[in-house]
Image (cartoon, rainbow over all chains, first blue to last red):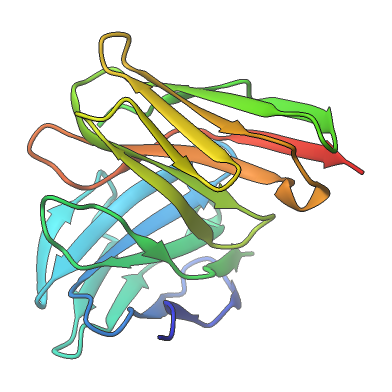
Length: 114
Length: 111
């Protein structure tokens, strides 16, 4: 079956702009999590959506938001971009059950803020 | 959540040698997973070990878990140049099932 698909793969934005990233999970997976990866901070958890509801949230400012649609596809939005938002954004899908956290990652979206 | 620590941060070996990476964490965990990431790409899930398991194998991979020492190790036997990547441990703890990732070990296997 198809893996996790993230679009776009690369993005260049200017400070102050906003951006929307998309993630299509594996068919049948209801949980989508988003991570930010930077050389300095490593992989940081942003938030998790399950059945269209945000179920968990990391320690990121309100400029970072997301949503999930009825088909489990998820979008992440970052408003008022800052240079420090340049990172690889990864989404992961999983079945969403609490007993098994095995997650499958997409290839990521490389965001560069200039 | 507190990130785990991987050791070493970087490892350089010759093809055919074994590579061992360690991961330490600070809280009790539900399970621990290991992932591989090729340069700037997504993470590939390698293996999951539950808190009540001590050792698990998958092909050339061997993972051990010592909950008393709050540590895990990943052993790659007979390494290949294609194993060159960053390796991350990730664990879910407490009531959360959201994995917390370590900083990763960068492995370079020279042909």
